[in-house]
Every structure is written in C-alpha cells, then in structure tokens.
Amino acid sequence: MTSSLAIGDFSRATHLSVKTLRNYHRLGLLEPAQVDVETGYRRYTSDQIPTAQIIRRFRDLDMPLGEIAAVLKAPDVRTRNDLLAEHLGRLESELAQTRAAVSSLRSLLQGPPPALDVTHRTEPSIQSAAISSVVDLEDLSTWFQGALGELYATVDAQRIGADGPPGAVIANEFFSDERGEITVFLPAAGSVRPVGRVAPTLLPGTELATIVHRGSHDDVDRSYGALASYVSQRALAVDGPIRERYLVGRHDTPNQTRWRTEIGWPIFDTADSPE
Image 1 (tube, rainbow, N blue to C red):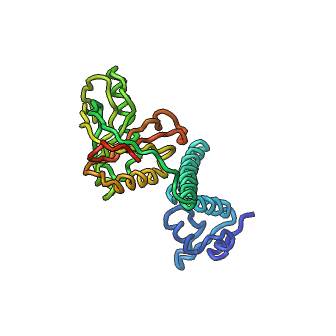
Image 2: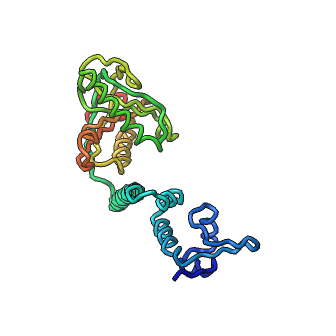
Image 3: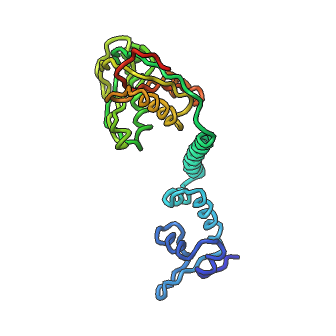
C-alpha cells in the first residue's frame, strides 16, 4: 500500500538531504508526488523510494545529474542500458588512469629509474605527409589520434605507402604553455598530394640526442627527464622543437607494454659519442 511521507521523513528513508531533494525537484529529476500550493511543503510516496535509491547509487558513481535524468526517462531498456554502458566505460577508463598513476608513483618512490641508453643521431630531412595545428594539452589525445588516422588513410588512398614510423614535431610552447604547434608526420614513399588537412611536408634535417621510452605514455616524463639531464650535463642543447618517433604505437598494437617511443632532443654536435 502506497503511503505519503513528508520531505523530512523521505530524506531519512533515502539518505538524501532535504537540500538535495529540493534541488532534484528543481531540476525535474525527482519531483514530489504532491506540493502544497499555499505552504510549498513537499510530500513523497513510498513508491518513490526505489527511484531515490537508484539516483543515489548513480551519484555514488559520479554520474552527472543530466545523465541520470536521461536514464530514468529512457523510452526502452536498450536505450537505458546504452546510457549506463557509456558511463561505466568512462569509469573504467578513469580507473585505468588512476591505476597507471599509482603504479608510476610507486616506481618513482622506489628510486631513480634504470639508466637508459642515449644515442646521438643526425636526422636526415624527411619527405612526409603531415598535419600541423596549434593544440591544447586537454585536446591532444583526440586530435593526435584523428590526425594520425587521417595520414595513414591518405597515403593508403594515394597508394604511396609509409616509409617509416610516424612521428611528431612538438613546439616548446606546448610544454611551457600547455598550448602550441604540433606537426604529426608520416614518412611517405612517394609524392603526397594535398588533401583536407594533409599536406606534403619536407622536415629539415637536425642533430638529435635520442632515448627510447618503453611502454605507455603515462610516465613518459621520466624518459624526458633522463634525456634532459643527459643533454644539460653535457651542455649540448640548442633551441629547437622536440621530435618524437612512434616506433611501436597504438596504430601497431593496443598492448601499451609493447609501445616504443623515441624522444629526440635537439643538440648542436654529434661528434662525441655518449658516455
């Protein structure tokens, strides 16, 4: 039998504060069964308790209120389940990022990483298909994957083929200001015709000190730090953008433990071999 509860009693029954219930009413997420037109007092029914409990569980999972409303108003089970799956997918991704950060922190606390091999190399000029843009740090992942996919699709469509692993030229402003120009490039085995964002680009040759980062990019800063220390201790650095080459990356395998990223720091001389 359905019974009526004042807002205070409904708050105790659901563990949702009166302030929260009033906000949910204002948003149309959980409306009272009755509102006194003179006093404004809200009353709920016992049948609304399960709905309130569902909302509370969703909030425990950090689901935004707008998404909760969409789930509750879903016209069918499939739509509701799709909305839930989308949110759970985001939670799993965030959990994976948290685990990676914890693992990296534990590794840092254990002491300095094993010494990594640094090599000097004269990078020749590279004829490539490339996409350049000023990118914000928060947009990097989406922009980068889209650009790389577009480059591969272009050389495939033009039947040119790639002539080596892809890479990126990263302006110093991207690191200092979290916004700067990035050029993603794919060495091409022939002449590239411009199409869409893709343009034929001849990357100039340069002198580099390089190090290969193994695994995901969650702790790529450690390899950057090791390379920067090496270059600064030997007073080799010159002005110029960082170059990355994705020897093994997402395009090759989803297994991040197999990724290999070469980081190149511009230097003025390669005559002396690394110590």
